[in-house]
Image (tube, rainbow, N blue to C red; front, side, top):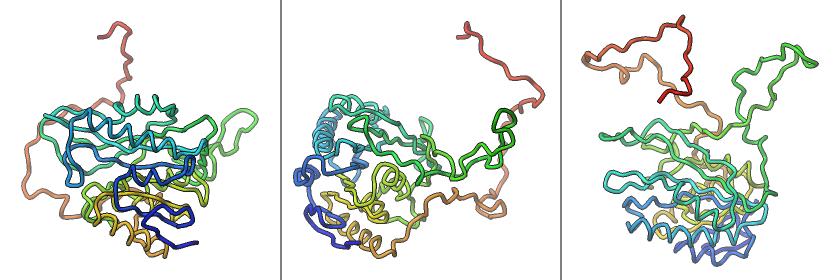
Length: 315
């Protein structure tokens, strides 16, 4: 595979990693050049790589990015926007809900709202701690690429057989695995994650790998307008796709270039796809408290008690 990395968009390069504004990079791309546009934009919450603005100003900036992203997207291509929440004065604004109308105005069609669940993060004191973000997957038309086989996950009951009918006694599960569904449990990138870099809001390669494998074919172009440290570009080149991305922070572009180079050479450290979520050994000392805490006892459900169904008049 071509290992050339270009600082400007080059359709023949394995990756084009641009230091500068995302609109300048997108402006270099021909219309319809990308099979997949996938990104995780800033959430406008004051991280060190973003300038905080009013929510309306932020959404207008997103509108400009999305408009150009749709232009560079192939007719049978997909757009995936991975977002969380904007928080102001303690109030939560779910960004996927705010961006959905903009995407619809641009003619896009929603295929899935994917929930990415993770178990670690900041703890909240006045609301439940956030443990998920979303990926809104849009297509430009009804004719789009969707390859489910490369992203299948193990069946829960692989030995299940039909108990009646013409296929009685035969296995009912696809031996290649099942469709992963729209809730993805993938660890987020924290301090002890093998992929961790200096970026404070880095997302895992596995999250983008599923999208790259399902929504593109080999040699297709994957574009990330807010590439950060190049996670999407790494996922693309690992699977023989081309990549293009932009970031205004030079140190992140430098890290991205190093990571993509390592990916092209087969030496990038990463968490493999389909690895089970870590379950700690119950004997670990870190799981035991130094002192007992008198927690209130909660009533346990009687296993013999029948389930109840709510009445239509229940309020």
